[in-house]
Length: 203
Image 1 (cartoon, rainbow, N blue to C red):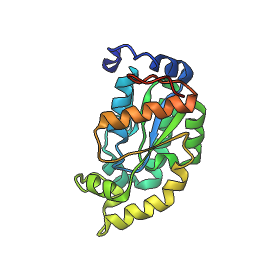
Image 2 (tube, rainbow, N blue to C red):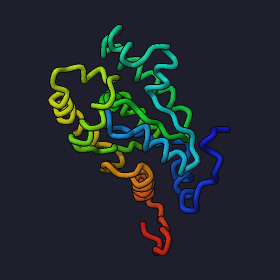
Image 3 (cartoon, rainbow, N blue to C red):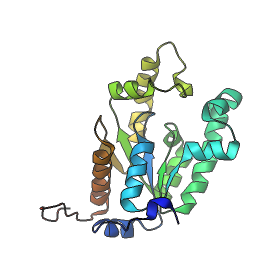
Image 4 (tube, rainbow, N blue to C red):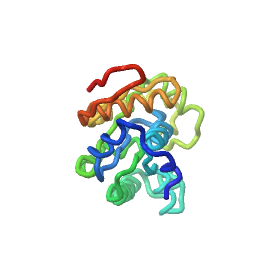
């Protein structure tokens, strides 16, 4: 029994889980968007297991993501990432957080489309910079000008992220707020009516 499954799902969430079936809720987006933090909150709200693909990659390889990048290069890392995500997608329903580059792989996108519903956490550049500057474990940002690297990645990846099933803008707000907006967006995607306190049911 997963620890995050202790609480029964709230009314309204039950229908969402029914529509979800065996599929996974898959978070995509750039580093620093909050995929892991928000993913954990959404998993707790829906009483689903949570998995972070980067942590799973580190577990199976017994190396950190930066070590894998350094030793094998990005191409080999992406191949490993793809294999791990495809395996994880067989275990739904669950909430799965993926690395920033994972959704750029066409086969991974296809697998997510077949076994999950994709959620893009869309963040502005300043927010991403503020968050990633606090961590030194970002292989792609080992550059004299990490802001320029992030801008380039946004230009390359945002059009692809935009093909996700659901897009939720993220910002510097409480994780619970963003997580609730993700659940509301998922309900909208599946056509599930939500009842908020004091509100009428709305699609």
